[in-house]
Length: 211
Image 1 (spheres, helix red, strand yellow):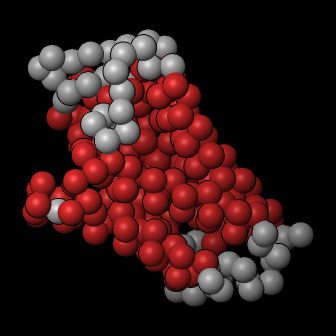
Image 2 (spheres, one colour):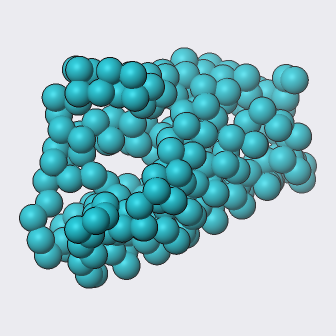
């Protein structure tokens, strides 16, 4: 096994754990949330703290969510570093690293911090969607189309809500439902890409090196 293949597989494992970890972390924080919390009416980030001016921070959900986001961000950043060394693909690594930074920022600056939290959340959403789409340049097979679809779902829903607001039909699910249509495709991309990279065979058939 070459060094590049080994690092690619490590990156895959890190990304898979990141996607799995954030999904289970959200579920755990939701299950333990001591107040009223609904999928449609509550934002994901409300688990860490609701938006000001009347912010509410409830434990243990806030600690679980914030810690999860920080750990996930570090895992994604580590995966990006491994992929850069292994494959030298800035078009994939840069947006992936920005996703990791956004995730860390969301954990360090919860929803009750206001604008700075929104900045990091938007960074995570946009960079995650872009990274998913650009992954098509680095993979082959059916996953090529899957990753483009996942990135497009995220960016289309985010952009459409910015433009049309509540007039966007997905907004009918509530802000919490809409946010999940933006965030969850990125999570599924992390899991899918992680599995794809862990299967790298070192012959450039699973992960290409096109520039």
